[in-house]
Image (cartoon, rainbow, N blue to C red):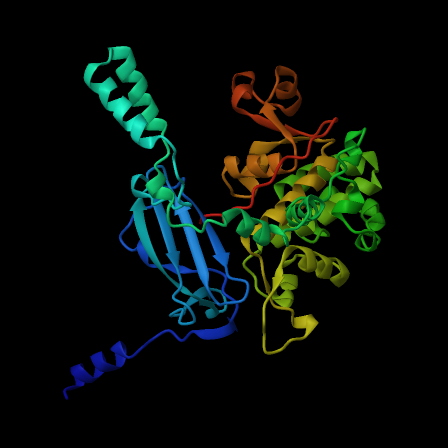
Length: 416
């Protein structure tokens, strides 16, 4: 081999080494075969189901004209592995992911199954309709056509068991009660627990429902009032890059309002956690803060707003975690509830959307999940917030008011 050939051989052998940081056996997603080469409308929503006893997954989605259905093949799920790449540490987090055999069908070709039903007088009706079609008036023919359109086709109902009522009764006897379902929905909400009977706006989301009492006692900010400048106070906060926090510091210091400074301090931590939501362990997260907050505060936040990941170390000090979409929404909802208290329950939406680097529509959805009222700024609000009057109609303001109504929540898989 010539010298030139040897050089090219060495260069081609170079490769980036990737370290596998963790492997999780519990699936967090599925791979569907029908997505290859198929463009799914953005409005399509999918539901994923898992069999309670078997390792079997079923997925269903539908658009205006198509059904998307798939399921795993029994015990042999033909598992894949989904990898999340961490560019900072050049490592991979692996998650076991089942393969779903999918198919796409037109809604017009749906097959409906039901019990065999005997229809008395069907033959007479058929004969009468035939006579009407042959000799009837236009009005009579139109009536027959409408009747046929709305008639139930008994052939589509013949394959299901005749004891359907008994089957339904047996299947529903173990369903949770209404009270239990309401409890589950409340627990699954990404928002703090709300008092729907509150008579003043401060009690809709009490501070203790946002920051636990034990953690609130560690928000010690008295020494910040002794600083000689507002910039010094900002530099002592856990996260110093928040435009929202930095804008509110001067006013709260001028008011000498200890409680609001405590809320602002805690909000600074939440802003920092959200900014570093791709970090995967506690030690790395602590290092991202300008001034690391108390471990009591960080441990409480990780307990409520993250899900744990399996690691070989297993020590709480080196806790490994991830923030999935549900817990990300939860973190943001708690932050927004805190901001309502800081801003006297009237919040400007555009600056927050800009700072959080998200579409205004998503932020509006989070405000509405909290039960907030979102409207365009009035002339008076525009003047108070320093907004040009000609921009007020498109500038959104979110507010909390009493009487308060908790919005209904729907459980859907969020498409990414």
